[in-house]
Image 1: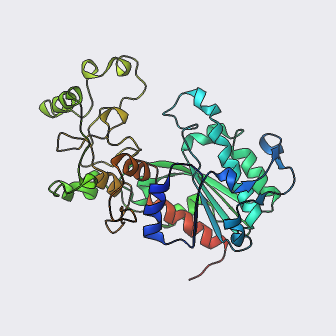
Image 2: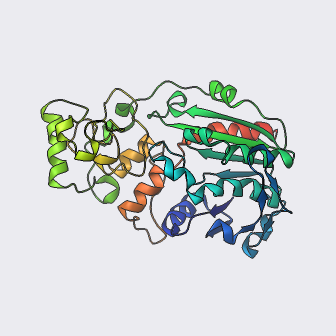
Image 3: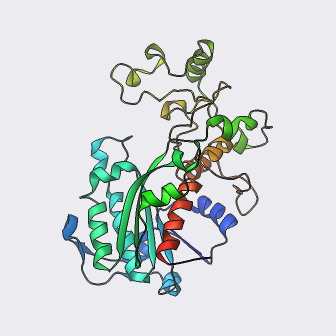
Length: 336
């Protein structure tokens, strides 16, 4: 297994990854330092100009020796949590780096995960990426997956594009084959209410006095949605995101866990029974991380809480990854 991290400033996340997965090669740098390619044309007219090539010496050994590429390009430019101006985010082009990297190393299969709203930007990234894969002779399947149907205790939806040298099962068929009962917040985190707070992993964030007051109001009134008069002005009448400053419910799945789960103003991240936001441990459970996953660095310490929230909130829930892996195995005719 090898790890290619496309964003700078992720050394701490890389250390946690290496501690758990022991990659043969770990390359942490901008993707542009790893690969060189050029594209022309838009939408279904996209094409490579010349052949993409690996330029990082450390990665030359991967050429011809890669089964599956897993990619999750930054989604902020496509998320409906951002305004339309973010649709022009230059990071969106990273999506096209994946077919280029696939071409350069000759991978058998590639799986790309992103937010569902990326389907509204098909002409920007999905359509040209699909065309580039097809020009390389890869079959394509894609679809939007609801994590709650796979047993993840949150209503997280993700778009998957899978390309392979062989034939591919339909994404919906693979999901149906491993469908699981809906899991709730209670199922995932109730037993953590009494966990001792030994470090940042099991402690909530420190809140301002005004946010503590907002949270106590929810519990005093047995409410789950913050009333208008308690919201900051930017989230009052006509606000777009009613779930912000919201309280989770025990017997429902959580909403999408994002990197903002430490902050009540970033989503519905207030604990169902305790007047605080989620801890990193609770958010990790809701994302499908097993307790055996080791969130420590090489020196044995924990990453700062901000780094913990980034690696947990940006992760692909394990059941979605498992489903995508089954589709990849089917494409490669792996039977054991």
